[in-house]
Length: 340
Image 1 (cartoon, rainbow, N blue to C red):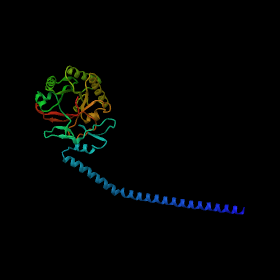
Image 2: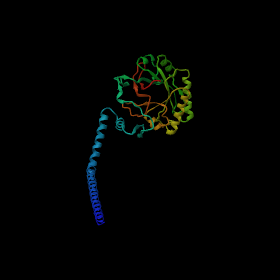
Image 3: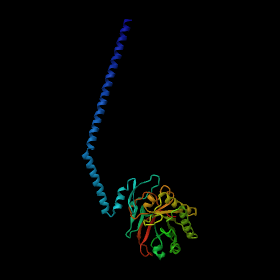
């Protein structure tokens, strides 16, 4: 009995000793962890203080400014104008630089609208200034023109021989002052002769509608003009800002102009044709709500091989000053990335 009691006391002392050792080890470990964390925090603070001193911040800002100015200078010396150089600087950002007749606007790129997958390095500029799009050594773009009465008499046989595959021919306009519908004097002749030479033909109308009803009237005007003709390419509404005093459509809001554009396109689609919208970067970012018209095909006017337009489009008008056999003076040149 005495030995049992003695053994119990010894066991209790052993357990207590073990607990004391465990506590000491734990306290030592916690102290080491705390010291390590404090040391790491001190090192991080010291590093942060080294990186973000006032002098270093100013030096970094100056270095960034110099790099940006050097980039802009190189772009301008390489042939870009000021606006073009700025476009290239912002090309990889999430904003789109839009130059209007009045100002430069920075417009957010919309995640909700599909983007094109063109590789701009695949755009080749020929010696005569023509553009073509080449993939794996093969030209996959299609050469086209758009014409109106301003080209006057056209030798369509020569046009076809010059490699033109399609033509968009103006049906007419609505006057930006009077609001009157006016047919293009050369429309019927141009369509007949272009078709006779085997070109595919689309048509366009220069809109100045200020109501949905006027947009539908313009569409009906176009449909009446092309009835019975072999129009296989899109029927296009041309949306641009005139920028002249008294231009009736210039004062429209974006929402109003978008509703007008949709009314025209829906009327054309209901008649069995492919509707398309023509415009520049201002048209598709400021004048129209791109999210609301995303379903319609787009024809973009952008006069530089370094295209700064991220969204899907079907045709690219790249110059007003092209040269085409059979046309006296300059002509609008286009490349299409599909056929209809």
